[in-house]
Length: 127
Picture 1: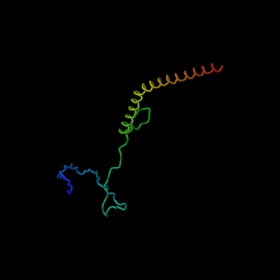
Picture 2 (picture 1 turned 135 degrees about the horizontal axis):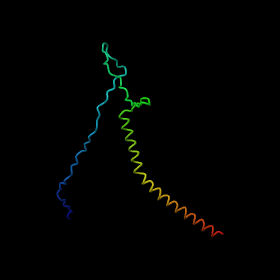
Picture 3 (picture 1 turned 90 degrees about the vertical axis):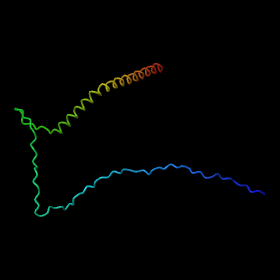
Picture 4 (picture 1 turned 45 degrees about the vertical axis):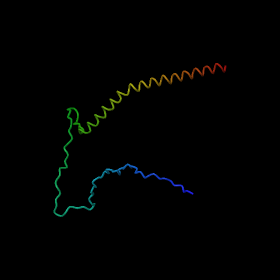
């Protein structure tokens, strides 16, 4: 009696794909150093003299009125930009809103008229 045999083919090397490990650039910040709360000057050290006076605000002088203080440049620029933006937004959106309003009124009026007609037809049937 003959023993069956299996012929196994030779092993073939399978090519694999190498995937590199991911690298992340993690942000970092320079830590902020907070001085201790009991920090004091050394003996004999004098503090530097700094100018703490702020220049007086400019004023608008109109003879019959008292002097009027003028706000700083930052305030004037901010308020001017806000005013221009508000006017521009209103100018550009007003025609669009008016158009929507007219169409909505026409639509609602049509629905009201149809409801009135149906109500009148219903009354005539009932009488």
